[in-house]
Image 1 (cartoon, rainbow, N blue to C red):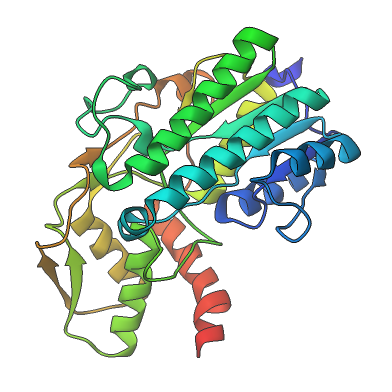
Image 2: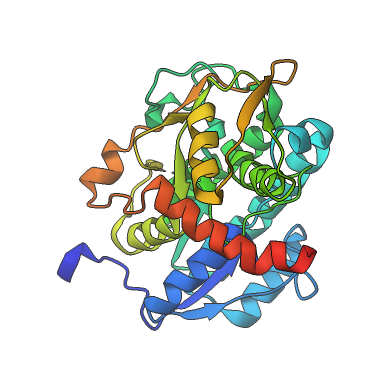
Length: 319
């Protein structure tokens, strides 16, 4: 088909599992542009951890395609303090949704993994075939193991049942809809909240966990959603596809970028008693580039848009 489209989403019934989360809501916005018929169900309507309930819902609603964006997510503290939740909830969600999709004849499914599934000391940048070649980062191993199971489920259902189920591997994300709870948030949201509060308090310094030297890759969530829709329409392979920018920065550089966006004029201190996590996490996105997609939003521009959203949707409600 034109533009390499194998599975056009226009007019298709598309179920976005996890539509209220940062990733799911971005995918919904992108699907609206694609003129898909979007199906959603909130937690009161459907418990995604219950196999029978999910299968029943899918039988009634008959989606043509499914995005599995639902997940129990959080930063280092959340992973360390709630390992059972991160393992069970994510395993239950992906098992229920992927198996139900097969049972009701969903034509295409996309599962969203996470770059934390790669070994802690994987060669950088991390290629897709680095999966299961080494030990995981201990601070998020529970989440990573669950996500690896989801990736392998898609691969197994494709191999055994011929299901057109694909997997994508996003890097670290930020953007509208992020979780700004200090105890649960990932690095970008936590940094933005901390910097905003420091600005309001005229604080001389911001405390950064760890040494500030680990390097991370950050992708604006609207870019991820665009990549997800692009791959859903154009990719049908058993190999996972990394989704990122292909560039990384130190945590210190991230803090400086956020400070510029927020307008914080103070300095930084580093609490080296707190964990750094993996020393570096950068995805090899050559497979994605060969498929014809590259990220469009610069880090500073993405954070400006995120801060605007934060001011309108989080800070204004807390005031």
